[in-house]
Length: 257
Length: 242
Image 1 (spheres, rainbow over the protein chains, first blue to last red):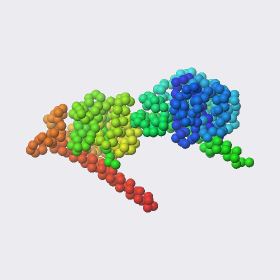
Image 2: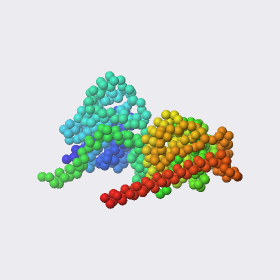
Image 3: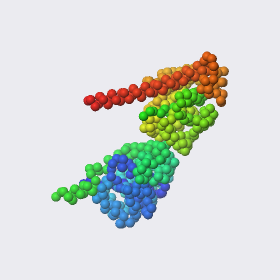
């Protein structure tokens, strides 16, 4: 049976570009023909769903019924990857909930591939956030994401401080999301389409649009650099492509003794 | 589909004759009755527009809106020869934007041929810049221009054209008196060619020589496309036969 992949995208403060990173992940897996679904926990309105309406659902990650909607369907969904965009400030509580319901045990047993994209803030407080998060991600892929899309300048940690935190996270990997031209970013926001769709000069209905060639070029170049980071950490190798979880599950029900 | 040239007259150095070369090129294209669009990208001293106020527009690519105003229009101009006089202060930014937005790919898709007329000089830095630019924009044609009035020395080995069918464009030196004549605001090369009775003047011979260089450049571009097309068809036939 194909092993599902779950990617949690979170931060402990707002405005660090968490949903933007989630959007680039959805585009990345789409481009690699990996069936993907997303859960947007910015209930009730949901920013992620605005850009990826066909594959996103808005949920309340703190509610048991919505947790069931996500976790209990991991084996039955056709999606190989589930991306969960966690509301700002709820990364640690969400990880705690996942631990409490046995999800992290399933990860430890190798039944689920789990990755956390922790979008960092610019202050030294992020280091404490990393320490909090690290206790939950021992058996998972842990990505620390410096998002420069907003032209953030990150606290320059000195070597000793850096080492004291990062030595506790032997397998943590730092990813860098480069800056995107502000006007290009704004236009994608206004168009309310995935980055890939904007580059392809299509609107929400898939029809030809009239976006600026210059802005499309900036987005294409930026997205290429973001995906180069995902290629560098071999993100697609986290995905079990031997068949979707549902297809495998159906075969198990129908054919095998 | 016919290809539309997009000429970029450029140099990383000031005062090497870029605007004069752009003027000459514009008047050459106009003399062939082809539609043309001109852009003056010199924020400090936009002088090309002074010679062609109805034909040339200024452009400021220091911000995104200015880049959109220029490059979005350049890709839309797929049936109109374009000449850009690129001010030296915008040299790096122009080509950086061109590379980042994937202009070459879109230009190829629309049968637009970007051609950089790179005005050379004797400095090693300029030669290095030429080489680096050719390597970063591999789908753009580079033709070196030797303006003898700006620099007497020309090191051919430092400024090889990007394709073997191209050769250096030579702008011969003018005497100071004649230089003063052609720099008058109302002077046009075409009108001067038409108005002078009798034998060819120094200016007429000079203009004729330069227009011949431009005509030769266009013929070489055409030959290059025809040769390339024949080569492609031959390769296809070989593949099909094999």
